[in-house]
Amino acid sequence: MARGLLVCCLVSVSLYGESASFDQASKLYRRTDYEGSLKLLLALPDKDARVYDLIGRNQFMVGDFKKASESYQQALAADPSNSEYEHWLGKALGKRAETASPFTAPGLASKARQHFEKAVVLNPRNKDAVEDLFEYYLEAPGFLGGGLDKAGRLAESMAALDPGEGLWAQSRIAERRKNYGEAEEQLRRAMQAAPMQVGRVVELAKFLSKQGRIEESEQTFRAAEQIAPDNPRLLYHRAETYIKARRNIETARELLKRYLSTNLSPDDPSRQDAEKLLKQAGG
Image (cartoon, rainbow, N blue to C red; front, side, top):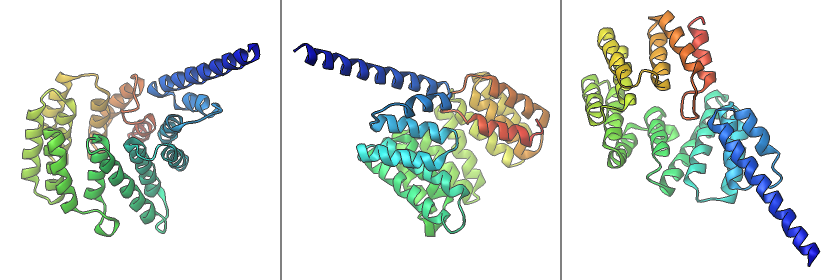
């Protein structure tokens, strides 16, 4: 009996240790210390679906998309009906397609679409998966499963989940069709539907900049700044807009430096992307 009690105690201690390591790895991930999080997770002797999920997210964030896709395949093997895992596997495959050879890129892109579609089937309210599938339909050619008709049908589903998101999607479709007046109207309606969401204001400012309406774009960026002056996404996307338009480069550098000094989350553009932009701006 004493021996059995000792075994139970040792098992409990081991499980507690693994749980504590996972919790610490989750905290490091949220603080964007992806390497530190990975180190803890890879050391765990027993890995379940949620461990493979967090390993895959960390690998994705450090740009190791092949390993991330392998980790999500293992997560799905343990939990095959998980919409989040399907979505992240699609994201990793999509990133691999972006840098693959012309021979392998189409296959990877098609697999990414299939996993996005399955993620949405498993959970139609998975907004991130729906948005990524919409982007795929919008950008990919028909022979890879894309198309504006598919994007339009999905935009209707997006509107049912979030009217503002549906308006944004309709704007993107109108812009692709070069119907810029309708695109602007839908963006303004989306902003009016959620006037305190800085992302909506930023989308309009970016659109106006692309149309060469610089002063209106600046006014809109200033309006976003009034809502959330230190919002990381505002800092990043304003700098990105300036760099793409080849204007206000010194300001763009300062915005990116501020961005890189903030406490970022995994939902913000990566430090790697910000550093690349800063290099483009001569910083």
